[in-house]
Amino acid sequence: MQEEGLNIKQYSLGSISSRTRGDKVIWAIVVLLTMMSLLAVYSSTGTLAYKLSKSTESYLFKQIMFIAAGVAIIYFAHLMNYTIYSKVAQILFIVSIPLLMYTLLFGTNLNDASRWIKLPIINLTFQTSDLAKLGLFMYLSRQLSKRQDTIKEFKAGFLPVILPVLLICALIAPANLSTALLTGATSIFLLFIGRASVRHIGLVVLLAAIPVVMLIACAKIYHNEETGKSDPLPKMLTKGRIETWINRTQDFMYSDKKESSYQVQQAKIAIAKGSWVGMGPGNSQARNFLPHPYSDFIYAIIIEEYGLMGGAAMLLIYLLFLYRCIRIMRKCPYAFGAFLSLALGFTLVIQALANMAVNVNLFPVTGVTLPLVSMGGSSFLFTCLSIGIILSVARNVEKLEGEIQPAVQKEGGVQ
Image (cartoon, rainbow, N blue to C red):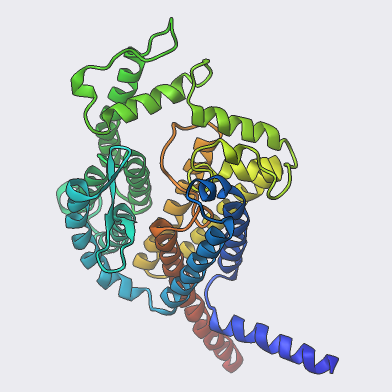
């Protein structure tokens, strides 16, 4: 009976292994992060459940459903040949432009920002910037793979690939500056890897730095050193998201003062309480005071409950994910697959690092979530789709290696 049970277990494990191809380490990372997501979301949604007269179990069940849907997306996306995404890239990029415009004009407004649109039939909202980022990186990978011969030339090579980046970032920035900056940074990195001229890239970076420097200058000028508070801003700076950007920049620049941001204060308290080994799963206290502990500031809750050791482990997991994506890129014999795996992997890791940096007060407060860990939403599902595409590239690389190795062995045997 024991032998029969062992055989059944081996068969089930073998069946799962045969159905899931690609990088096994990335599959393991997905499992680890989603398990951590269940623990962190369940622990951090108590106050939200109380405000909305719901139970924390309802949010746990909701997160389980999102994880199940996300894993299904990863599985079916990784089964497809990644060359199909080259054909889909152009359509996604073109569709994302009017969607971003519609979001700015008619999107669901929250904190003076229109980031979401509501789907009419299923009555759900999603961030169009998530779709736009995915479409942009797929389109950029396609263009770079086709323009390797002319990429050093400004008009014939560089201009056609940088204009889509500037367009998408410009449409995202009014509602979500942090996402626009992260998208632009990832695109610049991809252009550098794609052999674009350093001189051309430097020119774009200088132009993009102008509004950032102006924002920092405004934050400095309108901060009163004597009171530690902000002076009244001119009317031209209180329109739309500009005032929010200036206030957040001031909160970051002067976070060591008495009047620092409430979010920053509570995140620091959570991290301080966590110490080295943490207070234990479910024992967070800052979750009752920290705004959005289940999304933007979930990393602070993880450190509070699992300590600096747990926070460092999370950081290493994301860095390992990036290493595996770089490994896939180096093994892929085709330019599109190499650029695609690197672009999607790098954007997920840089998003994770940005979220962690905000939580430990290294960056100003943004609305960036922690990939695969923050409470489920459209960002969670698009993250799963990106990982599925990366695994699709890895699966095809694995398949090519499997075809080449027997051929080499056979050739060696004949000799």
